[in-house]
Image (tube, rainbow, N blue to C red):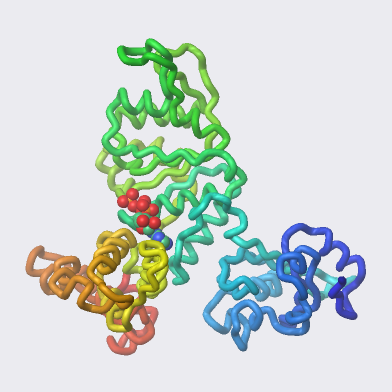
Length: 435
Ligand SMILES: Nc1ncnc2c1ncn2[C@@H]1O[C@H](COP(=O)(O)OP(=O)(O)OP(=O)(O)O)[C@@H](O)[C@H]1O
């Protein structure tokens, strides 16, 4: 069946049909005029979308995305006449999905903009590692992070994941791998904390039989095991200086030797590293090598702390309840959800998971309410008020103000506009004060 409507030139339709990913053709008025064979294959009869606007179909909006606080790739393509690409959360016939959307402007014979070809790449389809894209979130901070992961994934550029403990750095590394062309090869995580020199070498490079007492047979190292795939160096900031040199040598030469071996082997891995430490401060203090930093930090990605994406907490909590207690239809009362939103989560998503694990054990029925969650004092311990902080340490007034503003923002569930109104500031001034 061809869903071609009246006006689409036959050549354009047949070109679209020959292209692999689902694509639709959109007019300047945002209305969908056609779809290609891959789209029809994925979603069946496309008649339901023809003549309707892309923002209505994908977002259930009644006006274009850019008027609803989202970036609109069609707008970008229209104004720049260049392709526009963004990561959007779309409604699809399969439910809500993250989609890498690209709009390419098409000109007519007079050079006027006629159509936009919208290509949709669904993030979940590219990953075949179970749970690799099990990262949940829909807040702007989360979406921006995921968009960077998605951009970096196809390349060989090393990626450095930065963020507090429990923010999901390992999950992000898995997602990078699952979205990369190396997805069918191994993903090899290496925990760099607590590495001694001999462990580092034998773990990473492997050893030959007889290399040392106890080496009764040849052992393949993690670098070799990652051949064709991704090597994930977790807690990279914990590697002592003298081992940093060895890592640098591996990255610079692209080769290594098994302990006790003579053969030089070629490494073939995509490097992803992660740390919760501040590497810049470590470089200033002389505890992290600058040359190594520049080797690994080509593409830094910041993972937002949970308190920076507070609006994701109810979604995360519900998903985790399902994962932690499969088959038990647990739900949070409104008050419990509200209580969860109030925490400061120094341990981030991992801490949220721990709170829920405890609540699941405490709840007898199918409802988790405030009684099953830790009470106020825990909260207060986690997040000293600005007044407490000021009593405990002498802080510059600007810092006290910054902390106060951040806490007030948390209390308002991240609503910056409302906070600016209550503080009697312009939103711009508020952004400056948030630092
Ligand atoms: N976006 C997310 N969606 C669902 N689960 C998440 C998300 N982010 C983190 N988690 C869960 O939180 C826990 C901690 O995640 P992870 O181990 O990836 O964090 P990390 O930043 O690597 O922590 P650390 O620095 O301590 O190693 C895991 O159980 C993980 O599944």
